[in-house]
Length: 254
Image (tube, rainbow, N blue to C red; front, side, top):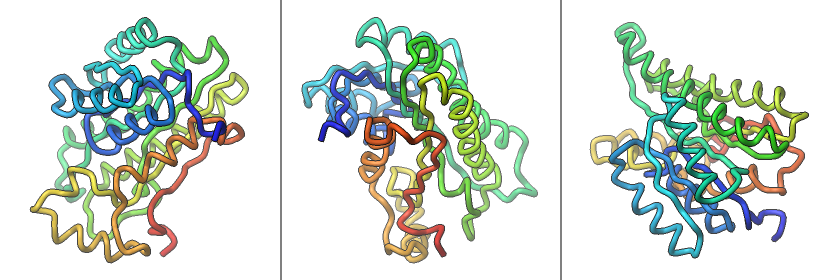
């Protein structure tokens, strides 16, 4: 359907080397976009992401840097526009997760989590908006988490939860600042998802709990975040901005 088509669109995806970011980067190409794939230097999966996009007949770039470095983001966006054309779509997926009891949480771990998960999203949005706002059009989607709306039973992650709550409210705030300037900003809050982090043998017992406590009885696959992302960056959601789309198998209903 044309409503969901991204033909002639240029997309920029952070965290595109693995997990949700990789799946969304490839999904945007399936919908017709050319995609710039941004991840940390030496990301082992970024070459695979580019190859999968090119196999679909779309153009792709592998770009490296950290989302905590605005200059690196600006350079990557500029490179994208030189090679692929005007940036019109961005999905910000870069993030980290870990757990530790709040009373023992080191300041550095707290700060690093906030720097990457929240400040990194802000700087990414800034760099992307810098080229979108003058043209009066564009769509940005930020990946938050259901942990930004609820506290997961049994997981000691006050720092992570706080960062993701910040992503949700940041997305709404930017959406309101830019609503009359043609730039839409929304976010997706995944529930428990079978990313590489949740597929390690050492967390197998925890994964069973994730599945048992999700109403649909399973975790999401990373590919199940692709449809929501395409919806939120396409004309299908042309009147949606400031939305936090929960994709959680019903988890927050309980």
